[in-house]
Image (cartoon, rainbow, N blue to C red; front, side):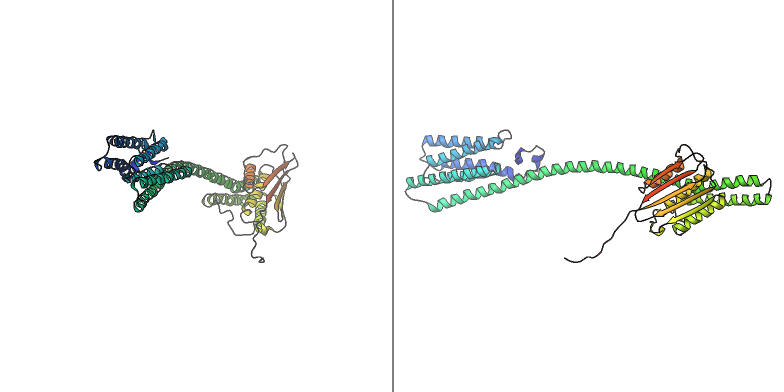
Length: 417
């Protein structure tokens, strides 16, 4: 696509030198043609008619060259200009001023096309015609004007070189205009993507807030629910003891008060420091032992903990979850199954962690997961773990948990080849 074929708003960017060069082209044709009329007093009438006709043809082809509707036939208009210029050399064989027109035609051709085949054919035709016209000049004048030929040829070659440069300039501007339109389109798409990302960010923010709310609910359920279960058991015991042993009933009520305070503290900790699940910096084994003992003291349930393998290999990111899972299982055993015994077995190796919690509670013919069991499953899914619930009515409840351990390997150094 040539520069003058652009839309009207794009043509505003065309350098004014292009319009000056375009009009200068026509002026040069007319001046050279007019010089043959006004500088030759003995010119024949029919030659004057030819020169005028040639000037009209140059004018017509000039406007056809630069008209958007007819510019695609530029080779035809260039061929006509070439033929008319050859006719000048035949009709005026002793004069060589017309040869400047070959340079003007060369500029026009090289602006409109960069097809190498067309340029090669045009160069061969020019060489043939140039040789013929200078031979004709030699036959009519009787001597060969070598310097005149070199000067005219230099002008033609220089004009052709200018045509090549102008053609490259127009091609570069056309490419820039095309890239600019592409850039504008890309910018529009980028803006749309940015807006979409902003929407996604808002959605992620909403999902994150929902996730935090769920974590708060789950944390409160795990901690406060565990304490409240023990509190209910103690209140039931106090109710029975107040009829037989007031002193023991008073001790039990004092313990209930402590449990209530503990529950309040758990709520505060859950709201203020949701991510701080560890609290006291104890090993996982110590935490589980304390959990089992405290729960047994508060509920009267006989609890046992069996550990197989090295628990220190369990990452700190998994330890709070394991603690909560066992705590929830014990709470469910007492609250829903009224179990008197519960056994926790924890086994770990290089590949996975296996946890089994078994109680002797009421059991159920069909396990329908409630809020607590659903939270346990959700916790495990976050770490690619799995959980199974098994129960037979009258034969207690079993929880089987499997957590894969992600193995990471770092290698340093090595033998050089």
